[in-house]
Length: 469
Ligand SMILES: [Zn+2]
Image 1 (cartoon, rainbow, N blue to C red):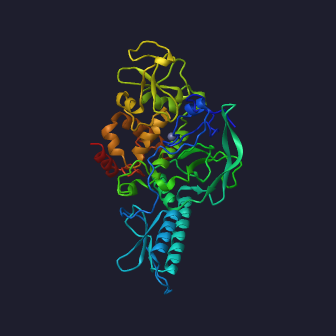
Image 2 (image 1 turned 180 degrees about the horizontal axis):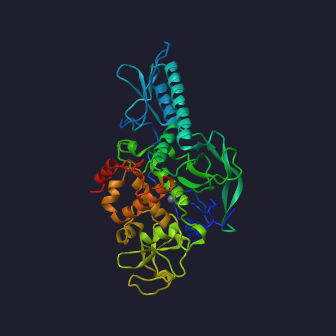
């Protein structure tokens, strides 16, 4: 077990420590430092808006192939109470919505999708056959994602090493006695993962997905975490150190599966909160690892992370700090600000040598330091970030790149022009690693408007130009 978070130092140099790499998507709900200072490990809940997890009734956009399930049985139709029970069952098992059709049959679809998964007779036997059919679709999706992206998934009862427990006295985290327990993915989750993998190429291959029923940190709720396969897991095919994404399986049903489904989720627009969005963010952390965010090649002075941080308006003192989570963000007037701690909502005005400044820019004791919110920081930042989750350069980059890749590219171009250019170049460098440019030095492949990787043709460029207007 590695030393973990002291004030704001959660992105350490040791990339093996999952405790140091708390790359949670909008999730540590209270600041890490706050928690440590208070030494109180109360249960935190997600900062994402909680929504009803009841089966919805609304209908919306597109996906899986329909199929008709015909039952040979002639059993009686279901009572209202039994129908409601079945509706809950299909929803809880896979996020599948069960409705009655006009002609007295049952219809099954993913919420937010137009197409039906299947239909069945309105009988108990029809329901069982639909249940089998949906299970086939789920298994086929697991196999497909394995084949196309080398993705691996936890199975029911699998464990992912030991859960970390906070020790009040030592003010640190240690592996406890309990296993991090996991389950197999539901269809709802697989669709979110698939959508994220699709827009996270070329690097997102061979990632293991853990659907955790017991979390990495005891009494600390995260939505998702990018790290690596831990030692001591029960899946011997996944080797320790391989890339892994840990998802809080107790919360996933609260979120739309994909950005497409999120457009009309429970009758409201929930884009930017889908599983696709969360997982895309975590996969950007994988991209950062592939691009050597904090490990420069051959001992060079500047890492990819340092280069990106500088471009995004972050600064460091002298000598330069390699851990970019300790950098400062500059505003339009050239003042520098430090984010207080992971997951918190506060920036303090500070010189890069750590000297606190008051609202007039005068040196002052820390108690008098000028404080602003995450939202204020976005407004005054020299390079405008894409969202308010910018605790560190790594997170600012991940938030922006997620939007660049998963369907918000035009918005990013409109609202964050400087960041857009930085991210587009960085993304192209990652693409070039997998698909080397031709003799003319022009990229052979680019990211298309829909987030996928395509050949660099005039037609593909023209599509992108439509976004960049
Ligand atoms: Zn993150």
